[in-house]
Length: 111
Length: 114
Image (cartoon, rainbow over all chains, first blue to last red; front, side, top):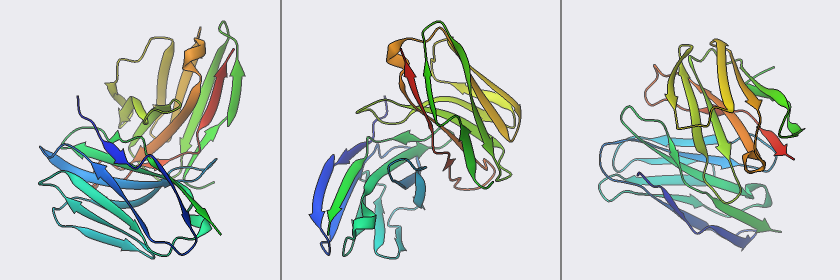
């Protein structure tokens, strides 16, 4: 059974803090790694899709890295703002398979 | 309307009721998905339709019956549900011809079975 693990499960930071989360996934038959942001009562929103080992993606203050050989991805948020409060989901796919999601990391940013 | 829409947003039903969840995508995609999210669990894939054909059924009980009449609409018919079926049901769509393909989600239907 393929498993995607995310850590930490939740965290609380102060406005302006930088933070990062981890996503661990099986390293065999890698196809793609997705990050989503999911705010309460809204649709999960795609942040990044990464396919190549060593990929780095950036969108504003949020960035992500990918290591397919060891099976992990990091999501970084620089200078957290209250509007960054959300659950961040990681999803992994092997070739020809559907996405397998982790349980997510719930971030709360206080002003 | 843009993106992926779902109706209703909230649904309360008894165990003997029959109801349907509706999903519509306005993105021109060719694949649609139903996911279930229960408390403290990751998103669980239920069904996948590619080009209107069901290609995946993740051992979902028969009290959940999907229907995909065209590439823009997806239904989930519910009958004789159990209280443990109470969850958030999310619909998603994607372009399976893209590489890699991204999934776009609707806001979900919060289902409560009493």
